[in-house]
Length: 634
Image (cartoon, rainbow, N blue to C red; front, side, top):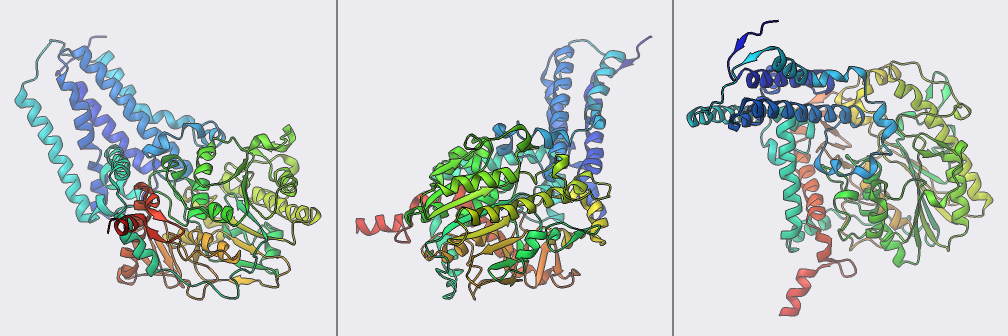
């Protein structure tokens, strides 16, 4: 076949156009981004272009056509891999990859089953532009003379790339003011500046975060401390010390959302045991309790529980800041004579737990080596909940008392697969296999928790303990909204999606006669002060952002990692304000007073973590160490 003569830079133009169009198609097919108007559609269309012009344009500096073309092919492969990795990650987490996530390599092996569920044969489409470029190189006759590109041409080319970038940023600023300085929402960033520029921005943010610690001197903590003290509440006198000297048993219920509590699936009760606890005279059931995790999921829920701080927006604190100084709940209880420990039948390095637990002053980690895991006792992510909880009770029976034991369940984890003998109810019948299996997996965990309570009683641990159980994060992501609409029989709006972030919280105090349903809005950040006060431990000098749930002064204000929030009156989600009682969208002014505060609180939490500011704080005196140093100098 005779090849046609094409201009020298045809491959460069073809690569830019092919990758540009592919990226735009990926936006609409792989990412569930809400496009509200034509301006947002225009921004979405142009935002990849400036980056692609710059990256592919570097080929202009190659003198030989062969080197130039080889660079273009390699660049297209790398860019395709980046967009594909984000698409697969988004299918599972409904979020975009960050730099810290890329360094969580010790988790990748355990993520295998979940990742496999998110990879499809049709994903070959993500490399279409690579194929087009290679085919063009093979079949098109391109000018092959060694030609030096004139400096004026290069300059004009990159000025054009810069002009498109500034146009993109200008339109984005009109659509979303202060996008790069105030946004906690990665989807908003990708929607406005594109996935490639987003990753450059992420590199900048992560570099800035690491620099913050090096430059921090403790003065930043003054403003943070003022905020914490101004929002501090007094403990409830009737509940303070209600479980003093008892063992503390905290159970993290994997991926459990509140929509299954006191509900059924095609006539089958999903959580009969937990349903009974909602009516138990010794149990406080919090029905409007929200998870506040970010990309760190379970590890974020652990971090929030132990520290009453928000997780980071760009990765798991367990990885990014495990060398920080923390004042954890475990540390406080250790000082009260408690034996502090975590039981979780997984690899000790998963989520960097073996390192982070030392930073949190957890005295003992019972990892997978502490359990007998037979082949029939393992499924999906590891040891099944029933044998795990049974063996955990045996381990607790030999612990010095009082102890603080935190147990992390495993079975109810995506992709929610079970052995046949563990399927206690049928699957659901929707277009989502994930949701269909979820009800079965939740039902199994509920059965495991019922047997767990029975084992505690048999071992004589039940009466002298307080048992706190909470859902760690969502199990069903927004990618399954169609199936959820079928189950809930209503449309999943941003308001309803926020409501689905509720997870159950049970505070069970045996033989106390204290228990009821608590409907006030609350979140995971409130767990630390609530638990410590119930055990009679004062937290008035602690640097924490949460408040005692039993306090009469507790404020109904829950902040999410993306800057959204819920109060008793309003819900703020996807930059829209909703009436909390009706779900009807209302004027943004109703949410405005809380928007600044939510941003401020997240910023203060980030400062504490990024600057490692607690190294400048004396927990015993409640004073800033910089203040104490100044007093000594005077």
